[in-house]
Image (cartoon, rainbow, N blue to C red):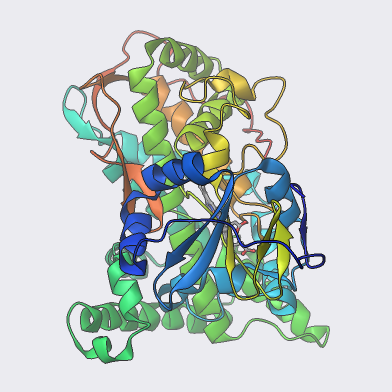
Length: 466
Ligand code: HEM
């Protein structure tokens, strides 16, 4: 039965086995140690197993066979609800977020967002990404011990803010920056409090609502001004594109995005679009520092503007250190997955982290080897950092472009020296898994080489956008 994810033939099948620990303990293990706990559970129960998670004692079925994952990703959108599976993000992103919607409502918003992140739009962002990267790298302290993750977070926030809003209103950007940072740093515990209304008047939940009100005020002000901006037709930022697309839709008789929908999806893009890439870049720097041979090859690639190799470095970092460990699909009717029955209402979790570390899918999976992504590519559904199917990450191509440009600029200027030989442990940070010590390295300037030659001089970065 492996390889099926179907809504039929479930009679007679058992539900997947799993630990009998109290739901509170399972929730804690999942929230804090999923990257260690889920591999243990796979060793004990096999490729498909059940866990129970708060709130509401939810039944989660973890799957890790590429064929089963394919079945779920290509399953009917009416049966596999990613929006419901992402409900935990509701308090931060809002009910109209593309991440929270399902079926026709999801497709409508996804179609409106897609053109801004489509392959044809990406080259238009490259100059901005490169310029912001150069400004940022000019402040990196050569010779000093340095937490790369802190600064990649600042850089990717700046990039996504300017890509989404444009650069014209620097005063509003200055206001937005710290508020978005605060929203990103809201802990999963605080998010969980949203599901228990009695907690909402108490600290830290009260503070969470205050931050949200500040963010809403800024976003609604920006939307209102942009709706009547005289240069709306010529602006290239995402918000202006969304307003133009929505206008076209309205003229067609189809509804465009309302202010509330715009607000929720702007927050979604800001949050989904910066912490993830920042973390992938931090892991890439961490591994480059620990693997001098790979770093030498990456320096040569940066000097020669070999984007294919730099993109392979980013992809391999995303494989070895999945930024998001699993995605979620809540099933609306009983389905058969991996030879088991998944009851209606349960959530299937295609485990990115399990399949990407599986020796059956990747030879010597613990090794950092970008060559895996040169020439022959990993088999289908064995490299899935961006999820899959109709819910695949909208920013996948954008984030690979961003990572390739940033790595190229960084490696043209610096050598990354590790401080310790041991790898940094992964630590959950909101929905991501980040390097536990912030990817701390020492930066040595690369003088007297080709450092400083502009990648831009030699044409645009091409990303496969897989
Ligand atoms: C390394 C960087 C990134 C990683 C690892 C990542 C990962 C993911 C994953 C795993 C999903 C869920 C897919 C699924 O359920 O199958 C997702 C969805 C999404 N991501 Fe990303 N992402 C990254 C960067 C970005 C960027 C830069 C943006 C926007 C600028 C973005 C916007 C979105 C959106 C809007 C969705 C929801 C898609 C939908 O539900 O239709 N992401 N991402």
